Length: 107
Image 1: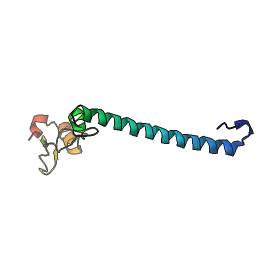
Image 2: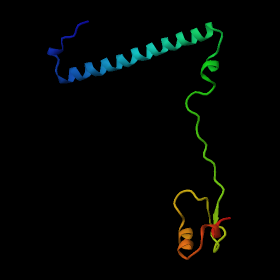
Image 3: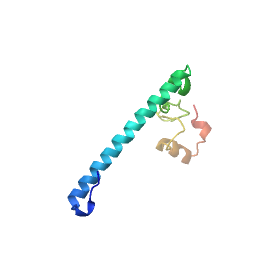
């Protein structure tokens, strides 16, 4: 199927390009499916499972962020604590300016 693109106007060219890109994506997906089937068949022929070869989790393991125990406590208000991570709270900075030491504020 030869298309004479010299006789196409701007709209027809854009339509042809978008259809060609859609078809290209379809072909790529078909190729991926076929390759996946080949890989699974090869793994099965060798007597293994996909999980044996690549592990049981797909993708990256998510990093869990837990809470960190506080290291410092405000002597004026014991309910205010700080773990030592992130921006310093105002009460911590004010206490240091007032002459307190880090060890004085430590829990």
